[in-house]
Image (cartoon, rainbow, N blue to C red; front, side):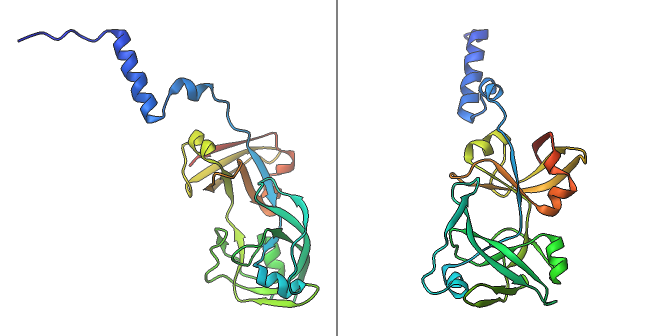
Length: 225
């Protein structure tokens, strides 16, 4: 029987590095990468419209005009607004339309908005509007009665593939966010949304931002749930 020489320390280190590189877990490279800058933006009440519904409210052939670009390059705040009327016949005027037009019409409100309007608001992922309540939208050229589409959007975090890799998360995973502020808080269960065109950005609504005093926060930190 022929004895096999034990591998040298250098051979072992080489094998380990190759395994780590194949798995995408190069510890030295990961440690050297700085943590991504976490941007947290407050998502105030707004709506998304289909082109067809926009034309009902603003007239045939109408196109949204840009007020300002949003943090995500794919979206913009439009100059155009609508009034939202609830079952109590109370109204919230000047609700901003976000562009570009989408394949579905959706109104996103905070819980305090919904209480004022008399709407029992479900928490949903954007676009998941089956079985949700509706409302009346009023524009300068017409009105639109929505049978559904009014939601309180789930708190969520947009990110690109590189950020998802850094945090070790995938699309539709959950993360928690720690906020250091005069009213320190931890927001659990942020929904992860990954897209090649997105930058790292957390969206919370006005109620959540007020609750944790986000305006005076000194630091925010994302942690995998």
